[in-house]
Image (cartoon, rainbow, N blue to C red):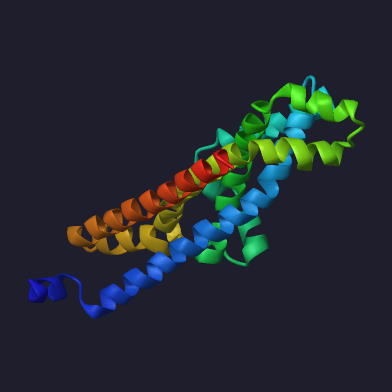
Length: 225
């Protein structure tokens, strides 16, 4: 059994699996972090400027909402190709792990923004009204009422985003982004090694399950604070 495994997965291929997994982890982690830094404030602004919001501004809300929806409705593979000039300007190249982070971030940020907006909508309006009656400023309402109350929903949304980014990263790998997607295409498909493709799929499934389980556990803990 060990000899058969060594024949199917020689040490060089195992090393390639490890490096490819690290590239996928890097793509998902960095793009998820940057997208959260962009998307969470954007989601807060969408909620604050919506009808009945603390900073109601329907014109701003509709313009930003239109941009967010435009990016969200664009298939990732099309977005990946459409922003190649921008990717080159930011990362210096359109291929590689660093370059893949750019479209992954752009795809994830609007997604996070909408999830955050949805979580903030679920906060009891009475809490906001009470804070306003006590003379709370807008930053105080955001950081002491809205965000603390919406934390479980936001964490659940970020978990969903990381899972989606894992699939997107595999897609990016198919067009030169590196990671497990690139490994599966180059070895599993182009070199007719189905065992490599099966191993890539298995690793991705385990990784997604780990991310989802960790996110679910964190949400449960935050919900019972």
